[in-house]
Amino acid sequence: DGGITQSPKYLFRKEGQNVTLSCEQNLNHDAMYWYRQDPGQGLRLIYYSQIVNDFQKGDIAEGYSVSREKKESFPLTVTSAQKNPTAFYLCASSTRRGSPSAFFGQGTRLTVV
Amino acid sequence: QQQVKQSPQSLIVQKGGISIINCAYENTAFDYFPWYQQFPGKGPALLIAIRPDVSEKKEGRFTISFNKSAKQFSLHIMDSQPGDSATYFCAASPDNQGGKLIFGQGTELSVKP
Image 1: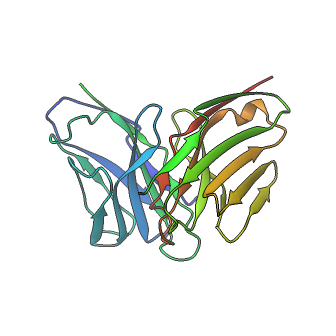
Image 2 (image 1 turned 135 degrees about the vertical axis):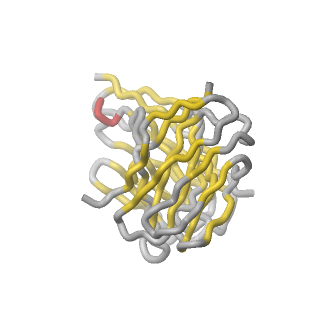
Image 3 (image 1 turned 180 degrees about the horizontal axis):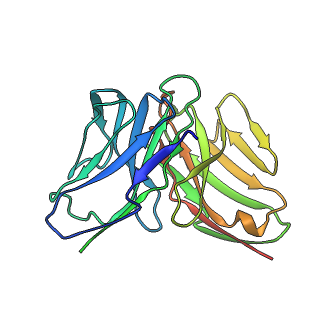
C-alpha cells in the first residue's frame, strides 16, 4: 500500500540531545514537508522540500535541520538548540504539480525530559 | 499577512444535526482551501478541498461553502454522527504547490448520541 511512514511513533530524549525523526514515502511524490503540532494549536511548517537535494525553511525552522538525499526520505533532526522540542511531529508529501493535496503520516510524539 | 482564522474552537452537536465550522483568510494569493480531519494520536486526513473559482463543493455529507469576496469559507457536516467526533482543520495554500499549507487553529467537534 502507498503511504507515508513515520518512525518511531513515540520518542523520548533527554534535554540537550539531538534526535532524528524518520519519514519515508512510497507515493512517488516530489514534495515533502515537516509540521509541528502543539496541543490546541494548528500545524506549523518547519521545513519543506520540493525536489531532492533542495529544501527551504518554513515558519519555525530554528533548532531543526533536514536533509533530502533521496526522493522517498526526508528525515528531521531536532537539535539541542530547539528550546521547546516536546511536540507531535507530522510529515507530509504532495505532488509538486497537479492536485496539491497533501498526505500526512501518523506522526511522531517527541517528549524531551 | 498569511493567516487563517478558524472558529469555533470547540463545537458540540447532537446526532443528526448540522455542524458548521468557519474560516477566514487574508492573503488573496491563496488558491487552494482544504479541510482536514484528525483523530487523537493520528495524522490529519484530507476530507474535502475547494478552489476559489467555485462557490460550493459537496462530497457526501460534507460541503464546503466559499465566499471569495468576504475571504471566508466554511465546512458543513450534514446529519452529524458520533463517528465524526474529531478535530477539524481548515487550511490554505499560498501557491499551487500543494502541501505548503497555512492551517487554522482547529475545531474540536463532539457529536452526542
